[in-house]
Image (cartoon, rainbow, N blue to C red; front, side, top):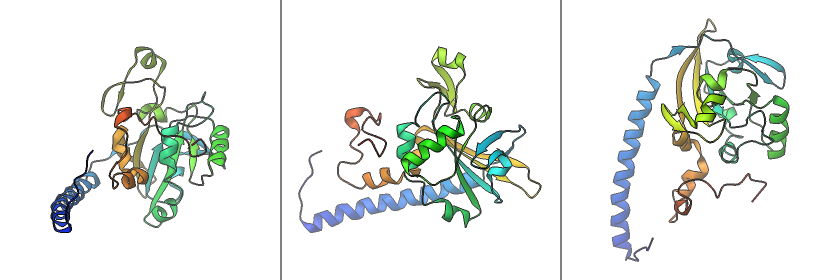
Length: 232
């Protein structure tokens, strides 16, 4: 992109025009947030088992005494030796947020199908402290459409992001939100997938401020530039 060089008055006019558009986007985002908050819930009928550092856990246990739960579906299949590089890029944003979420009655955890021992090893390698549990042997990932069965893998098509999706891996990324009432009943409130998760990636938002942006055009937005932070 070739940038025009202008006098301050012209620059300020362009900035104020952009500011009006930014404020409109903020208002529209606030309205969308209110719609998301008002979404109906569906009851979670199935029992799911997870493994964490203290042993076996239920979905209700993951709330850790709070009434709201955010799950980041981290791509890490049982036969992989390390977590997905794009999920790792996203996870570099997570370390500092749980304490703040906790004080708003929200618990955060990542969930992957890999056995907990693999998760723990990779988490230590990456220097992360956020909660991360294994759903190994559970239907959880499949029921929330972030893992795919052999038939889907063979066909290259699966239900993901609320439509038929071309897949080339056994696992995909997403975020799911759950709520729990005083009777310990758990409800599914919201899920998003694919680019629906990127608004939680702080690095992308900083890149969106600079003239070259994400600089991904030459990769067709495939994130080929991304590395695990210990591999750059």
